[in-house]
Image (cartoon, rainbow, N blue to C red; front, side, top):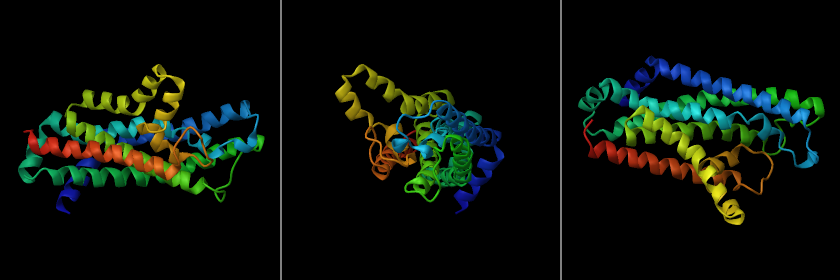
Amino acid sequence: MSVVRAELTKFRSVSSTAWSLLSAVTLLIGFGILYSMVRVARPPADPAGFDAVGVSLAGVQVAQLAVGVLGVLVITNEYANGLIRTTFAAVPRRSPVLWGKAAVLATAVFALSLPTVFGAFLAGQSVLSAEHLDMSLGQRGAARAIVGAALYLAVVALLGLGLGAILRRTAGGVAAVIGVLLGPQMLTGFLPAELADDLYRWLPSPAGLAITTARPDSTLLSPWTGFAVFLCYAAIVLALGAWRLRRRDA
């Protein structure tokens, strides 16, 4: 618990934490409203298949970059200013440092994301109601998508933390976060259509984002299966980060 308390103190005292979280909140709500307005201006031909919840949570796809960068900064800032040596002197086993950071980071991101995602949902549905495209919270899949979006962002932050632990440099970690979340989808564009469609649903970001949809989407895995796949990606990256912390000096 002492490690967690120490990591919480560091997390709260760094200005990049507030800026990253503020960016995530702004992007979540702002892009959700903006995309909802676009869909009102261009209503779907078949409203029965329209995912009003997914539309209002469109900001998750942009906010994931903010929380991913935050995850990187949580550890690379310490390497940049040399504080990591003091941290490892106090905790020689090193691995507990990473797990303490992970616990604080995931809890903070989830705690902030959940009410923000709910706000984005309410704002988006208010816009969509102009064309009677909105969904209520009680409809099937809506509550799960809202909670799932907050869980997804928390895991994205952990993915960023793992990449930061592996690379130890802010620029490299940020580039890696963007590459992991967005790069694979771009690369599938060079593959044959059938293979690209089959592969797409298993990629990190599409797999994780499946949980933010309220209606079935044939291009994605089922919500909880997709989230489990994304969780596996993050767990592997964190495990590699822990291994590198133990194997290499600060």
